[in-house]
Structure formats: structure tokens, C-alpha cells
Length: 303
Ligand SMILES: Nc1ncnc2c1ncn2[C@@H]1O[C@H](COP(=O)(O)OP(=O)(O)O)[C@@H](O)[C@H]1O
Ligand SMILES: [Mg+2]
Image 1 (cartoon, rainbow, N blue to C red):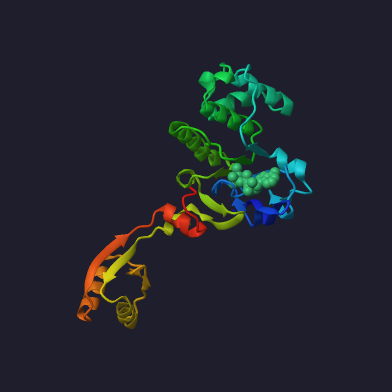
Image 2: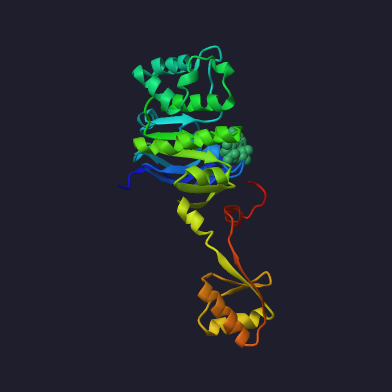
């Protein structure tokens, strides 16, 4: 069941001379929670605004639900719920009344208000004025509103921005349960840890370019531990191991190997020592996801 929900081909947006989104090929399948990750200014919101038909691409093509967004805009958008930037409410209405207003406008059955309040866990405060809501509650109300029409695709642009840790946790739990009802989710964030905890797929965007797109497991797999070996003569060690069919890398004054099993480590040690090399360090090193991100983006300190 490889149902494509979103496919973009060379999606590009230029504002005057500046290129904000640079030839993105995004691919999202049914039931996925796609984490769209990138530092501030990377091009996430611009991409999302193009997906929602709010701005026109400079170049490229967007297919949603296997249809061209250009040609079937209305049909497609009816099946998408979205929350981009901060949601707007009537502060002097209650949460329930705000949802009720949207429900009537869109001609949605009455019982759905109750359902979405349950999903976002706002039932208890549904009769309070929204101006008294915390930021987290407002954000959940925004998601409730996006869910009213039972969309097949939910697009959330940085839904946890500005929330405290417990608010972030709530939104995360909420998003994680959505695919159970067959929904697909695109959620953007500039926080790797957040995407790591809720997404099944990740697209990493930096300077408008997609630099990684795969399952979250593939990203985690890149964290597989490696072996760092301190030796008296790096070049010599490298060629001794090569002679034994063992590949290694000499980098930053250490020898690096892909394998860390105990038998392998002692074999390396014995081989080198027997060849007259002195081994002064053997260390297993695990990269953090942050390290991988930095490797991918080539930038520092932006996340
Ligand atoms: N309407 C606009 N006019 C000119 N530049 C814009 C406009 N919208 C976004 N940009 C620029 O595009 C780049 C990407 O912005 P944005 O998509 O908002 O990034 P993100 O959402 O990842 O933080 C930024 O350099 C931003 O300044
Ligand atoms: Mg943004």
C-alpha cells in the first residue's frame, strides 16, 4: 500500500533574487508522520504555503492525493486540515463556540465538535473563553479546528513553537495517535529531538535544499557506534589493517573503524601490537543525532 499523499517535483520558490525553496522533491505516503525539520529560515513555511496553495511556486510541480494541485486545487484543499503560524480565534467566545463557528461555515455535522474536543483533550475547558486559554490550549484548539472536516492530510507548521515542555509533550502525543484513523501528517519543526520523538519519516531542509529524506530509523541508523583507535603510527596501521582486508580511516589523528564487536576490537589490537605498533586507546564512539545533523547541514549551532 504505497499510497502517495504528497509528491513534489523540483519545487522552487524565489522571492526576487533570493531562493527560499530550492528544487525540493518531497515524498509522503499514507499514514506517515512526516517530520519536516530545518533551522529557522530554512524554507519550511514557504514550502508549506506552496503545498496549501497560499503562494505560487516559481518552478516545479505539486501532486497531492495523486492529483495536480494546480488543476484540482479546491478538491484537494477540502481534504487538508492545516495550522500555519498562530491560529486566530475570537477571544470572547469559548473554545466550543469557536469550533462551532467554523463548523457552521464549513457545513460539518454537529457531533464532530464534540469529537475533536475529545481528540485534543479540551472537553473540560470547552466552555471557557479562549482568551483565558494557555498557549498550549490555544494550539490544541487550532489543531481541533483543523481536524473538524476529518481531513486525510493534516499539515502543521511548528505547532509546538513557544510551548513549554509539557505543552510540547501534549501536542506530540496528540500527533502520534492521528495516523490510527488513516490520516497522514506533515509537521514541521526546528527541533531535532521533537521530530525524533513523533515522526516516522524525516525530511531535512537547509538553505532551501532537502539534504536528507528517509525513515527516522535510517537517520538513527547513522548513529551506529564506531571504533576510535589511538596508535603510534596512523599510516602504517592503516596499511597493516588493509593488508588483512580490514578497512579503516585515518582522520583527526585517530584511526576509525566501522565495527565495535569485542572480538573485532581485540583482533585489531593484537594485529597492530604484533606488527610493532603501540596502541594507546580503543574507544567506542556513538554519534549523537545532533552530530549527524551537523554533518548533513555543515552548519553549527543552528539547532
Ligand atoms: N514573503 C517573503 N518575501 C521575501 N522573502 C521571504 C518571504 N517569505 C520567506 N522569505 C525568506 O525565505 C527564507 C525561508 O523562510 P521560511 O520558509 O519562513 O523558513 P522557515 O519556515 O524554515 O523558518 C527566509 O530567508 C525568509 O527570509
Ligand atoms: Mg517557519
